[in-house]
Length: 66
Image (tube, rainbow, N blue to C red; front, side, top):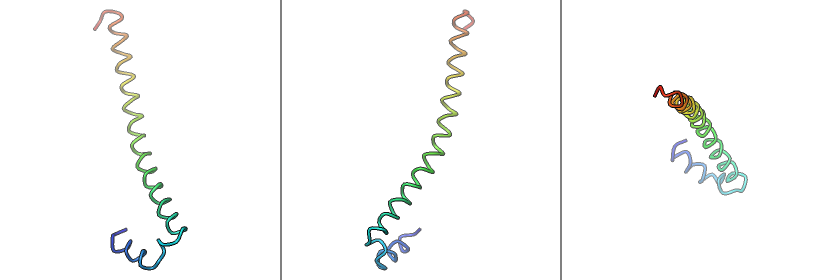
């Protein structure tokens, strides 16, 4: 939504009500949750790869191969 759209909503009085403000907060939370979900999906993969690499290095160093 552009700034002109937001200003039009504000001028219409929709953001002046408690329900309008609640709607804006809920939309903001939705955006944060969707972005967080994508970031966490990438983070899980990175942590899993790191655990496998460190575990392999530990095993190799335990047997004196590294």
